[in-house]
Length: 268
Image (cartoon, rainbow, N blue to C red; front, top):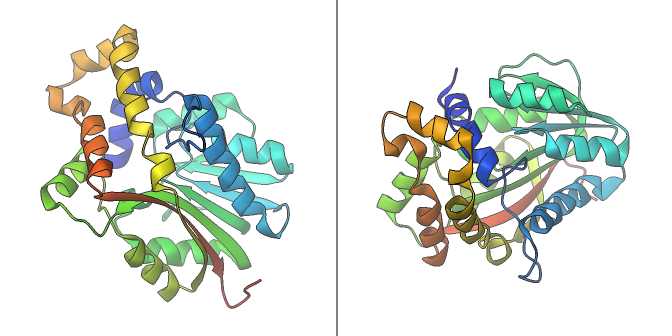
């Protein structure tokens, strides 16, 4: 099992108690939305970006978590949707929920003969050690003119080396990269950037909400207590990750963006 898979499997009950089923940032358009509403706004924006050229026939959700977005895309377009996760526990929950097809494995290594009209990658860039290979492999599996829709938090221009290193440790990330690095790497692999939207101010409130949920409800979860008993130390529970993310956004160390790429020279 990879470090990423081990991370999510070991903290599965904690993530589910705090985040719920969708393991990504929310988007607060008015600032008063509930967590569920903010998550739904994020999902709607991602799907709207995917259907820029109309309803796709086949979509892959790379790093699909518990399969929430995969199922929503399948319901929306009635097409073929494949969700890929390298976490065995997440995979079991995906197939139990149904609604799409799922595979367990590393996207760069998993065998799949399908080609896709679009690929979605929500908050998984930091878990990719070989970013060049990621964009190359994805390009091989997406049709010419197809889309790659990414949303993620990135290293901002204001850098704090110690804080960045701590965030990488907390999330067991391979790296925390800047938007320009990601765009340049994608471009060299044959992807053309067609949209770049800054969602930082709308996404940053996620962590304040998560801190309140951690304090108010996570410790009432039997699963969280079981995870605490199994942990070798408090560090294994990543308790400091949430306040660290709050400070990173406030200090301008992080930015959150939507990046949409098109494969090849066809730009509409």
